Length: 70
Image 1 (cartoon, rainbow, N blue to C red):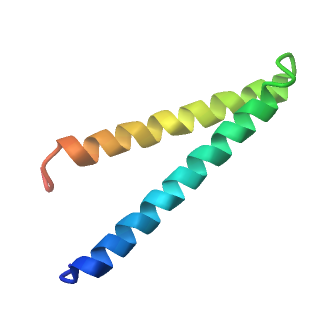
Image 2 (image 1 turned 135 degrees about the vertical axis):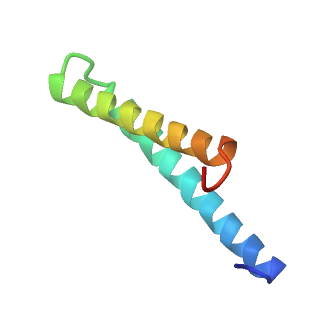
C-alpha cells in the first residue's frame, strides 16, 4: 500500500506516460500498415492490434466497475 502521496503521484504519472507512449506506437504502426491496405499480413496485424485494444478496454472496464473480491 502506498502511503507516500508523492510516490503515488510519481508512479501514476509514469504509468500514464507509458500508456501514452504505447498508444502512440500503436497508432504509428497502424498508419504504417495502412499504407499497403491490400497486404493480408498487414490486415492481420491491424486486426490483432484492435483485438488486443478491445481486451485491454474490457479489462479496464472490469477494474473500474466491479467491486474487488466479487
